View 1 (cartoon, one colour):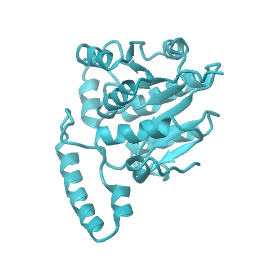
View 2 (spheres, rainbow, N blue to C red; view 1 turned 90 degrees about the vertical axis):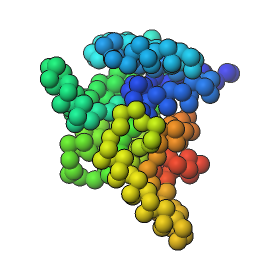
View 3 (cartoon, rainbow, N blue to C red; view 1 turned 45 degrees about the vertical axis):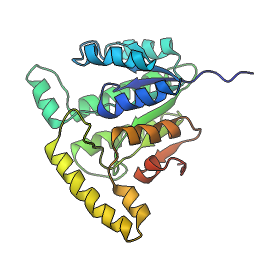
View 4 (spheres, helix red, strand yellow; view 1 turned 180 degrees about the vertical axis):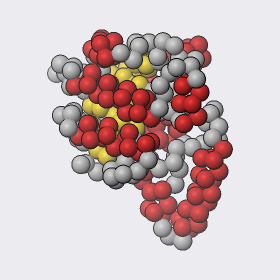
Length: 244
């Protein structure tokens, strides 16, 4: 009996990590559906790029029925949420009357996607880009949104991969974030010194990942079976796996 084709539906496809994840999986000849919201300013640039990689494009609006229909039509075996926003982006969107807070984007949209995945007849594996520390109680709004999503995934009944990287940064990031990039360079420098002194696992557990590195680790772990919570070391070295 032939193994069914792997189809990965990716929400947040136009983001820094999302675009690298689309490219990685599509160029590996998987069936990839890259979701781009219909009013996205990145549509004109990203849709042709994703198609050149071999991915399909879905432009369903962020409405429960539309997202549910999109997943069913794609026959996705894997559903990935790599959604993200920033305070600066949220402030800019609010001037246009759009809610782009952490709660609206990273929490509510992911929960909408999760509910749609749960509603599918053939249950897909759910992939969520979270953050290191999301398993701790308390924290700021950024972390609290991810904590709530993780709890929902644990209770969803779906097989899952939850990725918890530390810093996600790189000189190739189009949306330049001065404070984040500066902090990353400083912390990576300190961690490199600990690696030279023999603490390589400690270094790789906290050192930043760029989009290509993170996408590579997530792609490897996403296509495995079993529930996986991936820390930064596992994402950098995906041959090491841990099941919840």
